[in-house]
Amino acid sequence: MAAEIAQLLLAVIQGIPGGATNDDLTKALSDMSAASRVEGLNVLLKQGSIEVLKKGEKLIYRAKDPQKKSALPKDADNEEKIVYSIVEEGGNKGIWIRDIRMKSNLNMTQLNKILKNLETKKLIKAVKSVNASKKKVYMLYNMEADRSVTGGAWYQDQDFEVEFVDVLNQQCLRFLQMKREGAEKKRDGPLAFKQMSCCTVKEVHKFISDLGISKVNLDEDDLETILKTVVYDGSAERILQSDGTYVYRAVNLPLPAPGLVQMPCGICPVIKNCSNCGDVTAINCQYMNDWLE
Image 1: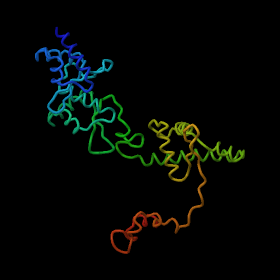
Image 2: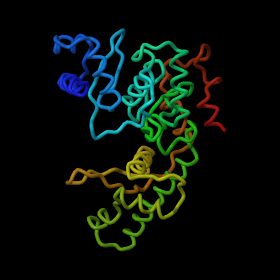
Image 3: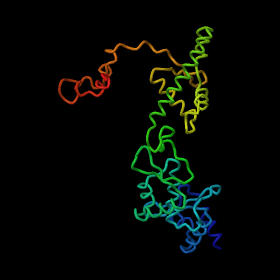
Image 4: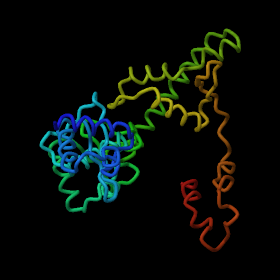
């Protein structure tokens, strides 16, 4: 009997993608008693067919994907199931504890206890975000955090790896220059020279991988980010191909500019506010001090 009731409830819940409230179930199954409804819901929870969420003061029952198995043990209480499902919704970008509290409607003491229990059981983990050093986001234990959270290959323990990026920048430029020099030696005409001096991101990626200078795995997107910095530095150009992809080519830098032309005043964004007194002066200018040194 309980199994039949559970199937009736499941059919109603599956028909409401956002999840069904007790009011929805009562309206759809008006002949079912409250006791029978609770019994059927408990059967579905034990089977793992539904999950319980909390929205304000109301409980929401939502059907689970039958192919997706929950890592939660069967003896987990309803509060743990609610918090786990909220964290699961956060995906690989995670969710802040403030948002978990708002969605679960649990007090902080209770929520902290549940989060600690789930962390101890290695069901969820806390990850520090590079966007907010003092805040942690929670995600499922076996999930790899999104780059927007970890900062990707350019961050380690929330610190930006300046030296690592500089080394990659130099080696990418060196490879582009080697390709250009090789093309110049062949002297096959301007069109052939341009084609032979261009490099794809895939070629640069292979070169960096073969060097073995990175302790982390870098993909082609990582290397393209570095190549763009080489372009921004004025040391290379980015050329659009007919198939929509880009290639990169080292450019010959002009002769270094005379000292006076290199003065920071020419590109200073607050030059109009600069005077002999006030907040912006040449005496207190950090850019001027760096240039003089």
